[in-house]
Length: 149
Image (cartoon, rainbow, N blue to C red; front, top):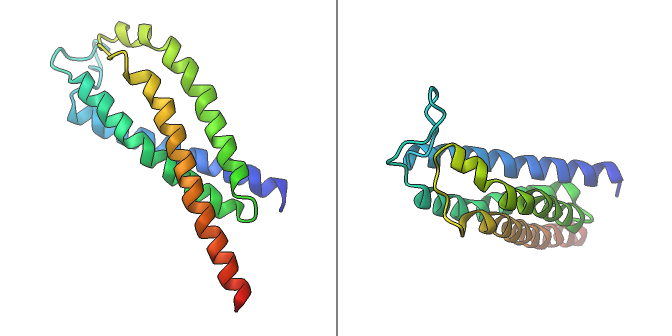
């Protein structure tokens, strides 16, 4: 197993997670009126920020799972290496974000519930571990089946 393949699996899997998060954040922002006004850069007073937070938390699990599943398929022989790397990146980026982002949201006029930001990296990491487990099981079965033929 080449190191390049493991690094590619990590990068592609993480990008899949990020694209899924951006798409679902955009959809959620439109659904819950949580997109900033282009002129004032403020979120409207009728924004449903608790609904947006619940939406994000609900989608971070499958986003992480899909990205990790893709990473395991690319990595093949050692599927857990990129999954552990992805989980580490999510924690490394998500925990400081949860700590330092609330003032930024207040500048935009968003009233983010205190439970929201800490749950995002936790949910994403659990999704990555779930997707890694699913992908590793499928990889193992696929390798066993092809070896038997």
